Amino acid sequence: MSPKSTFLFLLHFLRSFISPKTLRALRDFLNSILKTIKNNIFLRMSASGDQSDDQKSNPTPPFDPSKPSIPISYPIKTLEDLDSGSYFTSFHYPFNVSSVPLQPNSGLAPRPRILVCHDMQGGYVDDKWVQGGDNPGAYAIWHWYLIDVFVYFSHNLVTLPPPCWTNTAHRHGVKVLGTFITEWDEGRAICNKLLATKESAHKYAELLAKLAVALGFDGWLLNMEVKLDVEQIPNLKEFASHLTQTMHSLLPGSLVIWYDSVTIDGDLDWQNQLNDKNKPFFDICDGIFANYSWQEDYPKLSAKLAGDRKFDVYMGIDVFGRNTYGGGQWTTNAALDVIKEDDVSAAIFAPGWVYETKQPPDFQTAQNRAMDIIFPLTEQKYQALHGITFLHKPFRQQPERSVLTSEQSSTTEGSADYFAVLGDIRISTSSQNTVFPPSSSWMLEGQDIEWGGSQGSKTLSVKISWKLKDGKNLLFPRYNVYVEKQPKQPVRPLGRKLQAEREYIGAAQVEAFYVSELAIPSDTSSLKFTIQACDANGDSQKLDEAPFFQLNVEVQ
Image (cartoon, rainbow, N blue to C red; front, top):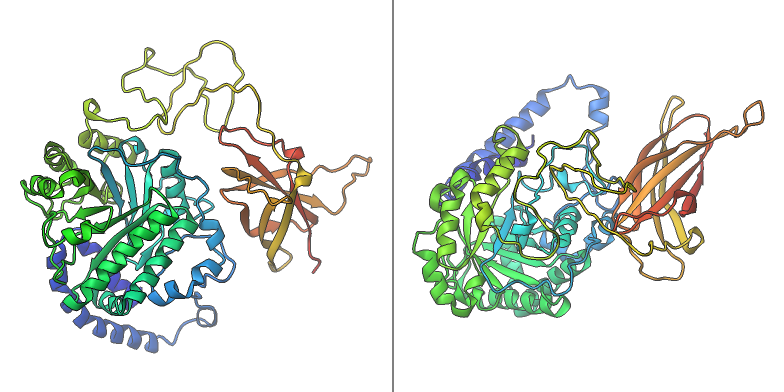
């Protein structure tokens, strides 16, 4: 682990147990030993003369977003990268565009709301794998009907939500925000450039708005967690105001929420409520996320000051329990009871505590228990007609031996019993099936083709993209991708043709898919990639009628 990684790991570990003010008091101490750690690691590396030639000649290359690789979600870490627009020219950008729009009229209801701020292990863990990961036990949320706003949070400058979160939240009518954060000495240097002039403040606000609209999420959480000169505050207000206005102009219904950190005097001083020190920022944004170290009367005082906008005040609750009212964890409901009584909204920070701390007996059970404690069944509010949820026991306690699982269909007439733990069951009838465009309507292209392998083996990496020839933007929510490895000798000795087996290799949410190091048998002459469009109701195009891309295997 590098010195910087060690330092970041320590910070993340300490954030789980220590309040922000105390943590900042330890910063200088950690910085003072960082140089020593660097020197020690350098000396060890210099003294390790017994490394193999392979270790010395094949170090892990740094991540280069411009080069083809398995698509991932990642943040923008510097103001220079934000300014350059390099994200839009990266190989990964088109894979990170969300494919599920928020339904029209998905405005926030005039009532107390729930904001969930997802902060887990620095962000971009299992959820960074855009085309799907290999951890079936990855963290997930399935209580979307309780949530109004979802924030994807990390301690990088510009945190862009992975599309899996945006797509899922949008299906349930939940808005998704990215995070713009400045902190520590590096953050202060960023603010000096960001807030140098009114024009610079406007420029970076417009760049953030452009990112949100291009990627399909709904706004930003602004966390300016640094001390500023009071002379910088007017341009800070320009930045927040212009971002809010620009987002509203480009995306009606979008949100910009201010985090309670720096005050109108430029002091880094968490108020833990809405008051005169942070209300000027609240007035130019769509809401405020109050820090989580509030006292019992702070929600009521905040509601009084907010007036008609009291539902735009989100009182923070840290589920880890760091100086949070009620202690968080399994008593998080204590803070929610006060918030509910005073008729303001709640911001639940780091609900992944259940997952990160491995609460027994297992994640699924612990997550359901946590949600039941936070939101007792008698108080749960169903916010939209996205489905019907039954809270009571079924008439038959045990399911039949035959269980219908996801991605399957049934033509059985009559009644049947079903059992589901996660997800949902849909029973629908349709008078007509989806008409999928014929194969001839599509144009498919293979890009970034790279052959690999050694000692008789062969692999292929390729980006396959597709679009309709007439230019229509007819997007389907899912495309299944299959490959047939067609043999060099298509006819058996008795004259029967060899049928290549069709192999499922993944699914795409956008009109592109990256095949990484696909193993190719030595007797393969060509590869046929079939793209099967699927509609929102679960119907899919017949594979024999779906578009395909044919690629001859390169001869070595």
